[in-house]
Length: 483
Image 1 (cartoon, helix red, strand yellow):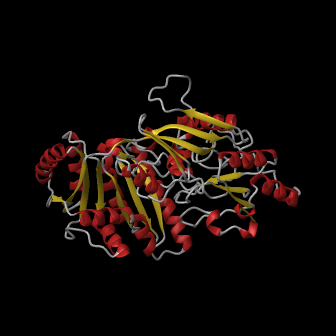
Image 2 (image 1 turned 135 degrees about the horizontal axis):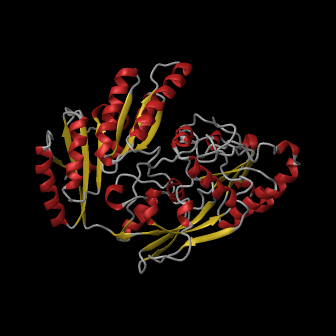
Image 3 (image 1 turned 135 degrees about the vertical axis):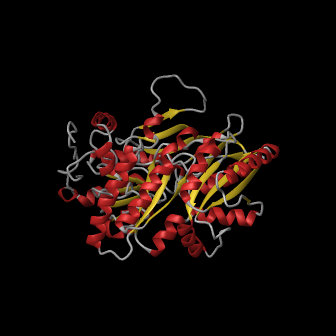
């Protein structure tokens, strides 16, 4: 890419050139608990990869921190000794953001998992980064509040959600994680602790630094505290399953549903062929099995408003080709539908290696993009299962390996992904809607993104982390090893 400086700040630094025993003692003294510092062969393989486990790095030390002070000490130590650091939460990442490309230290913040405050007066909650989304949502709902961001992986941590700006199923009505981050405490690469944002709703006081950190995938700092916006819990909520004879008809209906101004909480699309895998994976049954595709809707708010909205959408859906309009009034059935929707990537992974793809296109181009994928699937012979967030154009694909040899898989996957991403960009889409870029999507991101944008991103990286200690070589950071 013309005009982009190739950056590889840590390539010349070698741990074996240092007095490793002295470094070990210094790191142990910084933490003070030997049980939370492991070295080399003591480190479990899962800390060398992401949740898929296919890309593995190397680790010199694993450190489990329990406070911002400890994070600061570890990063100061790493900065002074030119040791790379890979931040990590629950490890549910799908794009290699948690793979330690350059060895060094894996910094695990998952034990920083306390909800520190629920401030009912300001509608905020303050939490540590290791709190899981599931635990946080259950906690605030138990107090009569609501935290809208709702990505499918509920065991992911809040810190991880912020680092990838996770979206999820309710984004069509409520927005994404970025819209609920009021403030952050962050430790910079050299160990300095910085606070950005606050409990105030309005802020026109200088640059909004928190927005640089949201979605930065651990390349600019390590989050140690989060102030999150919460809302009063909706009075009621109901889900609806709308079956269709084909996905294209269902996707065409989505635009009309949005245009009806009923403001659904979620609008999901999914094909029957992947629902079958979800059923088998969980041992559950999905309603209306004779359909080829489904739109799943949720409405929340006041019961009278929900009733009116559901009635209007029911009439509209039938006019636009729906086979039926099923109110999921039985709580167990509704729960099963959403459980199956939530495990689809895992269900595919259980039967074959697959490449998870997370692309976003303009809402009005979603049907065209999916039609292209179906045609490419027929032409290439490579199975591509689609589902996702119809209300915001976020298309998830599971590109399935099947019986291909490793060489065939790598070659055909690359060929097909070039076409998939190329079509998405042609339609005005982006590389990722919510999973992030990491290393597995970096090639496509760098290839499409304007070189000026990449230069500015790297200038920001250099300003905050001139030694490239944190998560080097990922996302926007261009280096020799990435082609």
